[in-house]
Length: 391
Image (cartoon, rainbow, N blue to C red; front, side):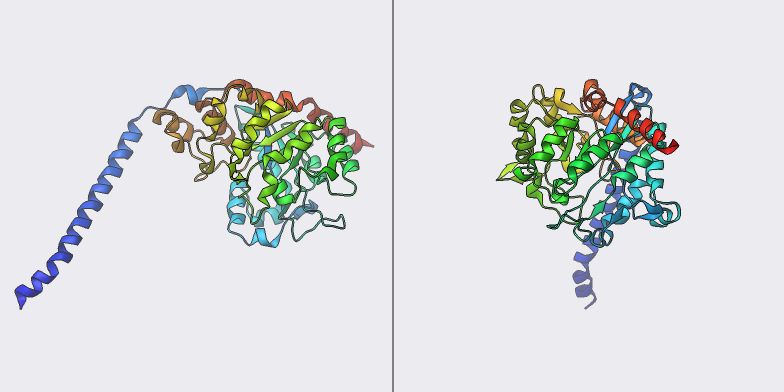
């Protein structure tokens, strides 16, 4: 009986022994890998680089209405898992917002930019909401709302921040709003059609496009699928829908070069590429192109002949945090020494620039944001605000 019991227990004992040895081997491998990683020298040229003076033209802010900002996040978004993650990315807590006001986010953005050796200024973006059939803001359908007046007022307080406006063309007063934000120093108009429920191909908004041309206001429009929000109408992110404003002469900056999702069975990145030959007024930003869901797209874009001349620099702040972004995700294109050096950079803007440089982004892409947007408008907006305050 005893021999029989031992024989029955032997397979389990063997399995436990194998599991222990495999675990020990795995731990040994991890420890050895860490020791090798620690021993790898840091690429000092990456750490010490101070080439900069760049403008980040794609920076988000948000708020809960604290301090009279007028901003809000709807219930669906606040109840999603994204909400606490995004607050952490902004470097604030909900308690801090209610205690100090939504302007604390913009204050923190300015402080981070000031600490950067590579980026001198950032365009902070307002975000309009969904407009219903009666021409009113639909607060239930609007997941994130950041008013123009709030962003214009707060960015005016900081020399290193500029104002990026957002106007839904379905507002009855949208043309007047364009004139107002231009007077406030807006450098561009920002859309996320997928969540603002804007069809860029809708001919009914042609007068809005013509006014953008008249006012020389570029349109920064999200291109591709949108996964940062609870819901999205991703058909509106089809880059081909941007053909209408482009044909009317609007300077369009397609955010992220359409590097997510498909339409009509074709990848949005592939759908946008032929449009650069057709429309000389089409540009694209390289924001978010180092994220884990867009791996390889920056290298693909830079390999397209001539496309780098149409690319501008942006980050899509605050979406530069681990595990969404890491230089170690790009070891098929950069060596471990470079990845280690980039990961050690404390400032998120400096880290973003360094990673994109390591992936081959030429300097003129970083410099072009300020050229395309005419950063002098930023200072004009501040002067106008100071004059209004003194009257």
